[in-house]
Amino acid sequence: MYNLAGKRVYVAGHKGMVGRAVVKALAAENCTILTAERQDADLIRQSEVEAWMAANKPDAVVVCAARVGGILANDTYPADFIYDNLMIEANLIRASFDCGVEKLLFLGSSCIYPKLAPQPISEDALLTGTLEATNEWYAIAKIAGIKMCQAYRKQHGVDFISAMPTNLYGPYDNFDLQSSHVIPALLRKCHEAKLAGDATMEVWGSGKVMREFLHVEDCAAGIVFLLKHYSDMSHVNLGTGEDVTIRQLAEAITKTVGFDGSLAFDASKPDGTPRKLLDVSKINDLGWRHKLDLDTGLSTAYQWFVENAA
Ligand code: GFB
Image 1 (cartoon, helix red, strand yellow):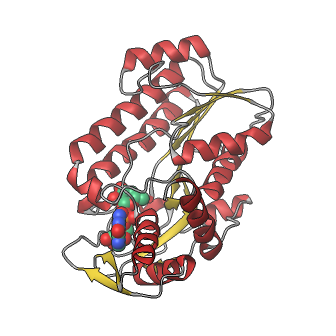
Image 2 (cartoon, rainbow, N blue to C red):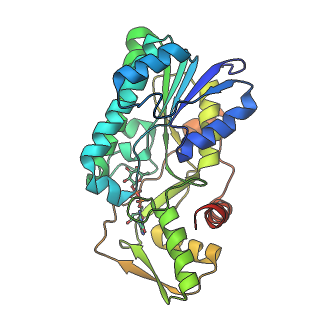
């Protein structure tokens, strides 16, 4: 058990969707939350990270900072995805070690697993097969982050852990249609199709592939849970253990938004991995499970979009 009370906890990436939710979740923990603006510490620059960490001396660090995006962004900008993520995590993990950080949680992604991993995917499927081509650059960087935590743990005995969330969505998501993930993209497209009175809404790919979705507030609760209750070498999956086809997701979104047109699948766009359902028995056995089901999560995400981003 790691007691967060009275600790200085640095949330790296506090402007992102996950970082914001983690800051909100930590507010109930009686700790001091530290954040750094880009002008204070550009996380890609090692000397800036080292200087900021040495000056601010966090007790615990949550590595939410990352370059993230949906299937098209990953496929289009492989150099940015591998470089930025490797630099951010290497700088933060190394500087945390140098500054004597007591607890570090590194956040990865379910895309670290082989494209054709047995489903549901347990933690030990890591590095057992070939990665999905559209996001292997991001996946390689995230695997390196897990391995860095394990290496520092093994060589120096530090309490650095990793969590691998499934596909996330929620408030402060990215609604840009070229770079976003599927849920924000379809919420926006559906909303705009409804307002325009369109007969169809465009959905990328075949609609047959399956995805698991976790609301970012559940993800943040899981991160805080692991910070407090988990200390071991293996990374931990963070998900719901339930998935849907992209067609089912799109249909649920048309109901949430109130759009009564039909779906038009664009087969020229990539499907990505056929399925990536996480085995969440490890975190469930530790005593944590998600709270928000997909329908509830979609309606709160849609409400947020309408009020803040539409
Ligand atoms: O969310 P998404 O971009 O990421 O796409 P991945 C999931 C599925 O939804 C794919 C389909 O099969 C897409 O083709 N899809 C349908 C759409 N319509 C749309 C749309 O309008 N926009 C988008 N974006 N997708 C990412 C990885 O993979 O997942 C990252 O590339 C990361 O590295 C992230 O791991 C969680 O699940 O395919």
